[in-house]
Length: 185
Length: 223
Image (cartoon, rainbow over all chains, first blue to last red; front, side, top):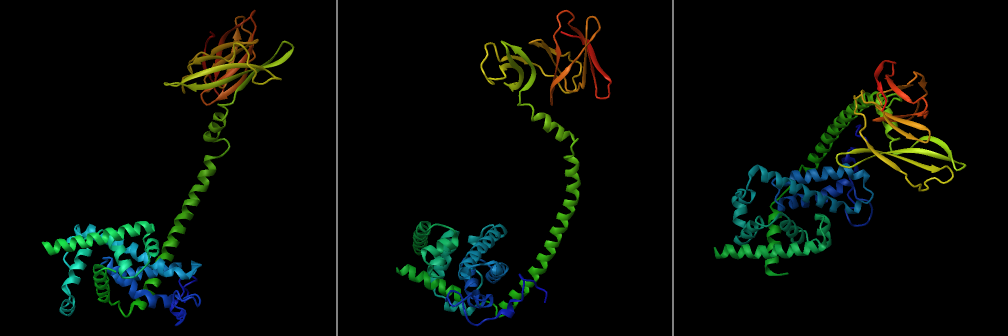
């Protein structure tokens, strides 16, 4: 096909076994994609990117470009997470410029079915999450959605474990405060 | 886990569940990779082309700029002599061979040029000699200032003349009209020095300066 070493047709390397992190050999790119694409898309969405699937796709394309050069494939998920976080930040910066006031933007219109299912408390928490700082939101998503350890969160965001703990504490305080304000007001 | 943390985790899970990536994600990914590959190859070809053109232009230019007779190379060579003392002459004293040499220093604001003559025995370089170094502040000939009469210094049977580096040959004659042999002992970017033997019976009286092509520049009486 003439793709060369770097751009070989990855569909040819489909391998049902050896998923990421199980320690039975080097995972194939295809396996990593199928196992983690949904999670990365959801991570981008929770971090506030309006085109979450596009962000996840781009993160995988970047991983694919580096795939042959990687010596240790056991850390690709960490690399993907960090890429998604960085790209979501870029996307949010872009949105801030475009919209000027992203915190105040109206929520995307939900379908009748979703609106019916979503309960009042979750809506409030979701709304308050948008009021937190970017880093506070990132820490909460990585901690309470991905269940990552303090060390893994620090690695993903490029900050120290101490900063992760402090940011988590402040984020929870802010979350509590905003919820109380909403209740009171 | 507190109640709030539990509710937060539930909310995030519910929010995440709403996102259902396209079933064609893998196909979209493959298309992206192919597109990126084509774009990258085009980009690489462009970069290689521009680099080749720059190289083709740069190589002859560098060769031209650094040819042995280029002004930049010549200036660098003379400037490098600036910090090195110039040996003016050797002479005998107390049965020992001595050296007379010259430092040129630039100091102060506005910058002044100071000429320092120093002597030491050949066998004891750097030995402190009373009365030396003997320093004099001078005004160096300005670039293009060709009319300045040479400064004169006298030391140990030599007269030393400072003149503009635009002067390529310095001709000195005595009162009787005899030519005095001159020896250029130092040349830098903004000054040149020549020595002539000291002869009190028939001292130097007039000077003439000439360019590289032998054209006369200036002439006059010596101080």
